Length: 314
Image (cartoon, rainbow, N blue to C red; front, side, top):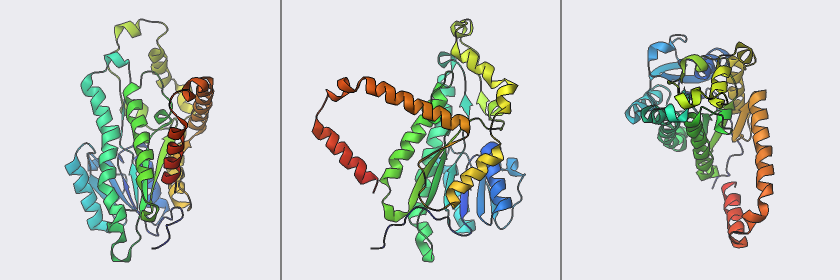
């Protein structure tokens, strides 16, 4: 049996399959690949006309894709394989937010954001895993690939007014961590969760739905959601957001640097600091209840968990 690959090596002329490329991070990543590398890219959007910023050529394929439709996903992946024969890096970037008082957000709006941000990512990932494992290895090609799931610092830290967005992103992170541990090392399939902080895109203006406020929260001077909505429109806050081009370059750097792919990648001082603070607070909180926690169950359970964790890291 061949030795398991060590880390991930981006193949020469790698093929990238990116969702949500009409604006923001997806658009910047397509532009980075098309203009600054020799890699190939499948740029997708619900409306392909939104991809007019990049030219169709031998290295660029523009494809219609609605991540909420398995039929659309299958068609997009099929077109990518017909054009390039393989897919090396999958970037699940499509998503949006619905921001407001949890009680005021309709069931339809709540389910729609989770369907796009979480289930869209799930369905794309499940469709491409056989491609990475099997199709890429055909005709002397290299087995494996990289799945980059674009979460947010909001996939690790929760803020008021974003309950369903956080639900989708927390679910994305749990799904990614679990599936990454399912991959046998010899398949050479890697996963990375990208956790940007604030980014200079139109996400805050066109990719966020804000329903009418719930009167009980809107009238309360201590409403944290009211404060959050104010931040969204504060020009001083927006001035400190990261350049979207820098986020795209960092994502490309993760894939191309060689070696071990980090499972979680906070991008930006705000993301790194917020996640670090949350980790430290969690450490304090669980230490405070250690005696109570350890009084339940048995040492045998702990040993079994350690063994399972060690097995998943091989």
